[in-house]
Length: 365
View 1 (cartoon, rainbow, N blue to C red):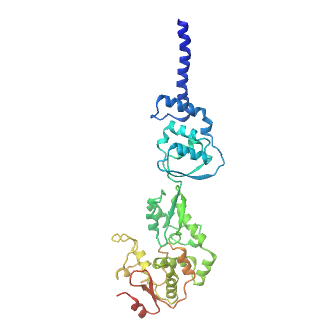
View 2 (cartoon, helix red, strand yellow):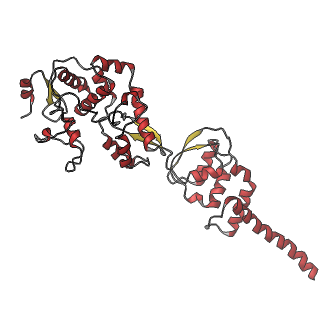
View 3 (cartoon, rainbow, N blue to C red):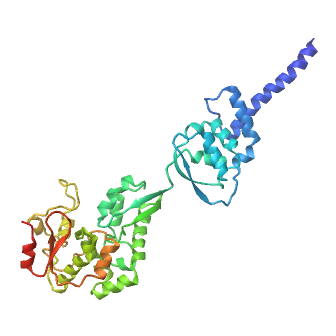
């Protein structure tokens, strides 16, 4: 009788040990199971993962490129796993499905766009899809923004750069670029554009990238055009920054550039409102860096940037001009105009005049 009992107990013990060994082995290799699984499910998925061990940890193709893959809101794990297999990113849908269910990661996959690759294992892919935050971000700088306005856009950009860090670094000299030789700031050379940047970009990398983009747009034709106007690159950018702020409608930029160049060549002050606005700085009441309208007292503000009080160009750019403003300075319209004023009606267009008397007639009542 005892022998019969022992004969029955031995396989039962072996079976019990096997039942315990499988989950323990899976836990050692793949971490603890989801608390939402029952005992039988734990054993079932543990056995499945151990059986497919190599398929979970080895990529399909170690040299595969990254591809775009989007997880739709509310999409099932089965659908995601199936599409990954169809795309050749994984081998079989059940491998990923079972791993996700075992670990509990199936409930926390984030909908969104990903860059995935067949060189990632199932384990890597599963963890990657827990965070839909893209590795790259799009950062846009608009023509006419000054350093502080670029900085103000950083908190919502996805870059881990504070506005204060950016302003401090951008307002300091930058070496390595001939056109910035002797400049105390990068203002004017932070090229307005749409940039795709790594999320981990730091402040210095960002500023150098913006200035390098300016350098790439500083063509031989532009430089020859600046020289034809009697300007070096730095002087041309100063003037272009003023033109950028004045030209509400881009098609008027060549005419506005012509007015300012005529005034410079005629020994007249520029009398440019944007230079005074730059000198005033942030207007807390209006919530803008560009006070408008300017008062008569504003025009008396003592500043080297005030072109109502100081002849010639201001000491540095007042904003970051776009390509259109740079081209307008390089190839201005040939006009007899020395004055311009905003047309009535708020269209943004300007009325141009040859004499001060004509200019007065163009002013709105």
